[in-house]
Image (cartoon, rainbow, N blue to C red):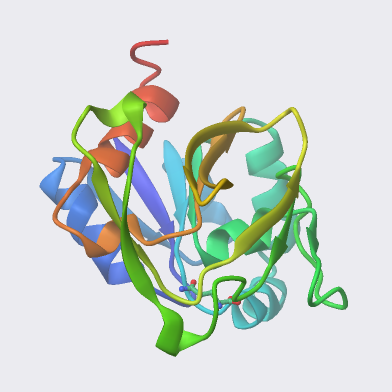
Length: 194
Ligand code: GLN
């Protein structure tokens, strides 16, 4: 499978390494023509405001939303989740793609100094707990019944899905545990175990 990674800003290389380890082909996506060559897209963590600005500068904004609304499988991590949200409650002047039916607070778990690791129970990826790394992560403040919750931390969803989109508040590309990327590819890209 050709797994695109939005390649304009953020934690691109770590996702690339994971995709290679899983024996798929990563492709950095920087132009709208490249959307035609990919089976799925990862929206990496980074700085959502910068990413949003660059998406517009690179003329990717409307084609990105078009491909996602047409069903392109997407895995959004951290800033990627912010980008897809309906609204950023604590930064309302910022545009978002308004595709995931969630509201978020940017840095909702605190600033850099409060970044943390925690063990999550995610039954869909196996019995063993998953150690998630949160870095200035978005906190989901509201979500509708369109959202499926795969994992929560202190009663707040942190791994969710809506149709063709899987989104994590944390950074699955930063651990050696590849189960979440693997779950994305199996379930959302190859439609196994549905
Ligand atoms: N705090 C960042 C933002 O608001 C997201 C952090 C991340 O992606 N690790 O965009």
